Length: 476
Figure: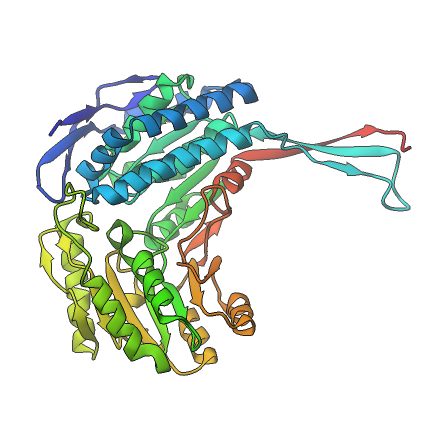
């Protein structure tokens, strides 16, 4: 296994850092890479240099760079997939899927980079109007600071930098110190594809103080962060007078209504819980099943989950690899044990080997238990029965989170009711809560998000200032 080393990328070249951080594979415990960290002096310089840079790429040039990146990612798919597995422990099925998503983000950003994003407003729409027209144009910010998490380590980065490239912005990126290798890889690929120096600078640190210095810096115009709700709240508390895109945690419900097709509901549940080892903010955390179906649903779900293959992430036949580290797996194990003590029943799973945690199904879970009341970031299906649609909606909304949800039903009045009543950013019908395209609006409310939404189109809006101007116009 190749040990990759990266230093801070500033001004289009790698620099020496203050010390090295090891990147450890969660499955083998082997060091798979090292990244050089920055100190306070280097951070100050990186902030200054990134803000001072001005990018003057035409729409054609921006689109061309993004398309070349998208194509390169697909051509190097096997290499990138293995790299993500090396640093994250995710199985090759999941990391190969991530490669496709990264390529899509870059391609969609290339398409949107070519669009005319201006608007025109006639002024003869009121008795007080004049013979004029008002126009809008969008302009890049001076400095965007992006902080990304360990799950989907390259796709999360792509969602920050692709819209920034499409809008001529400069970005200072700090990826997770747990999974930084794919971020540096993507940054180097961007430079190879023609991205100008300083358009994307990449740094790393395990220091909370230095990370908070980025957030607090008056040189930064926008903080875009994906990660836990607790850290998101901290960022909101300290960031000062600047724009924010905070995409945070969730406890997404899937409501299985009385008329649901059980086979379809089980299929959606398996896909919506266990991909990426359950480490997705939109993963189904709560299976709210009508009591008339609950026992049969639990039996069928347990049977399907028992067929999932888990273990060595490099075995292409496996459906699941590890979670991010053994500490995370121990936390999951403890929360399942606590739920069992509170009356839940384990139907399958609840087995840990190091950072491996078996696909697990629990029945009769309580909605107020930490297993689901907090974001347990792993492959656990928690079944919560409900007796009426009103009760199901109430339980779904009885959470600090408001990211996404799904409903399985063919009864249109009930579907309409669920869509309107759930307090969250997304409701998918007969589909998992996490379904979306890379350029559609995405984000939550309550503890699940604050500020602009993500998705290529919405992020491009967040990364630009709107200027209006008016001109005389003789109306026909």
